[in-house]
Length: 353
Image (cartoon, rainbow, N blue to C red; front, side):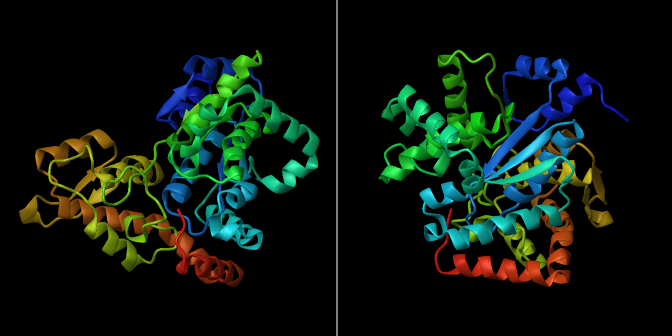
């Protein structure tokens, strides 16, 4: 059954914690013009649930709404950012593992395209590098350095010369790919705004729409789940016991929903993916609870009706439920399992962000 334009808008908009600009998104949908979204991923080792489960949820919503989704597998950017020691053979394997994992956890591939940045750039290198140079000549160094957050760097970090090109190239990607919507995380907002600023300075008819999805916090409540601390992130290949142990140790203070990472996982992963959250309790402790929306869950937690220990047990169970198809896929697919172990060996001695 086809969706109305309003239904398409609501579905697309639900992906982002921020949309710049909503009126432009509505106009794009109403125009009937093909909608192409994109996100770029560095190939840098193991994938955590923010990169895996959350991205699958978002992509499936967008393709259901009729969008085409382009994954920019950023092998050249991983090399610039010295991920996996800048080795293209390792970066390639890590990229293949990402694609395999997305398929394993249920991404609808009907309107999804995976593009390797080195390969795509070389298809029309003159066009791409002219675009890069033009953007570089529009903005000064201080303006570009404000975007280094996209690499996991701070403004005052020591940067290699090649890394200065990173934001300029990521800005160029948007126009080179010809996408309408930048569907990246909130941590990529600065370079997406750079792209809108570039479009304005060049007086383009349209600017890319920014649809930023929230960043899942680390298990300790830190702003962003990162690979640099394995105990603070849940990975797509974590075992059931790994998940149980990590969730048990997660920050989950009574009556606190403001800095509660498990509540964020409930809102952005479990409810969109499973449609429910079940709390199993003894009758003397109030009996079982079930939630289909986030607000009643938050209210129960804030009132003290839902105890953190019961919430943790439920969240560990549901996260394992979502990861079980991935585990099964790698158990049954020997080639995929060999690839997973190979990539894991790259990161055992040196963790990457």
